[in-house]
Image 1: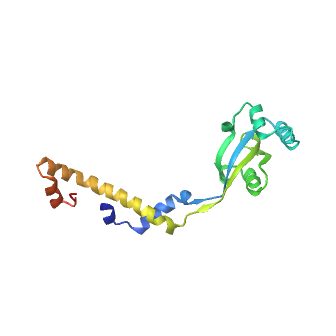
Image 2: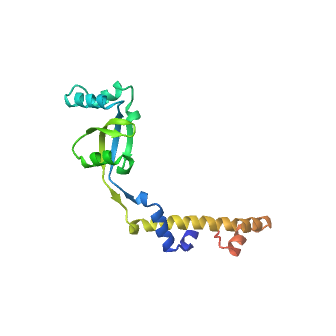
Image 3: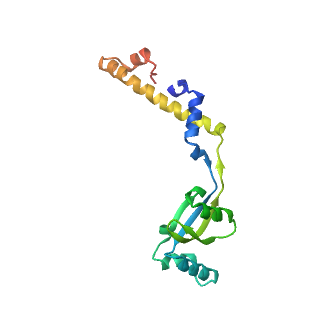
Length: 172
């Protein structure tokens, strides 16, 4: 009930949207795995074995003593990678395995498990949810501000019906 009476300044709603813009505007992402090699020669040899059909990516991971969890990068945006790697990985829409490419840990093969399209929730679509969230916070603060008065009334022997008559509280 109190939420409905809480006034929220539209500039505060906009500021909250802007503060959380990363939740509402997300670039294209990839579900990636990165298998790093100690040197370029090993990375090139692994790629050659893949291309020749002598092995597969999962076997290469096992051969390095790793698990798929060890190489999983999860959702990855271009900003999460080096500029060079991002340019190649996000430009290629056909390949499952890309590389070897230089990574911060050395030459690596990248496996793309899924492509997640960019998303954008416009302010107009998010504003009502943000307003409700801010109103709920405001209502919670208003109730907290009333607690001392309510406690005093109860301590003074007031009944719930009397408290409802004397305050904004509703007896139900």
